[in-house]
Length: 184
Image (cartoon, rainbow, N blue to C red; front, side, top):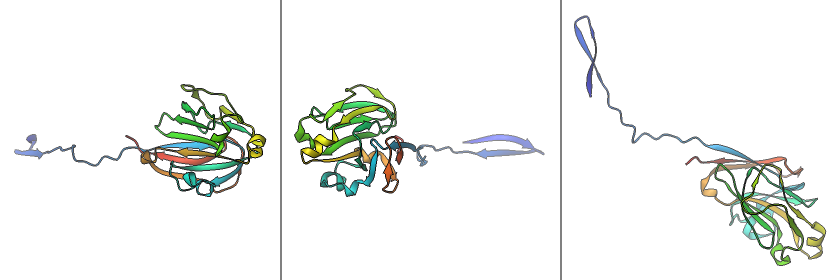
């Protein structure tokens, strides 16, 4: 479109403007979500978990803790979407769209919920650090099961990147990962 802008010293100055926004590659703003340790103990890489489903990231990416106490807390704020009947797994979502699975122990589904006391139910909104489950670590070990707890982001297609701190001793609620979520 050509429009007269001004008349300067007897000359018309025209501005030729064409605005086409429909093909511009606007970059959407990403959001970062901090994930904290859900238990106190030794932080380990998800790839070091002694279960191929987790170690090979078939369920998603994340981190694990070899707990030294049985108090399990929320890694971030969110909503409880499901609690397994056997109480060994909890799914939650964050307001930023992350879907997080907390898996408590290896092969603990076989224990039919006995060593777990849940403190949340489906539909509950939780804050960072809220108590979710108490695990009886001795009962799990007596049943010859591993007590490793995993925090796994299951919707990795929505994640730009995940940075996890190096393996070390952590206390529940220590920040251990930053997840960059793609904006939709």
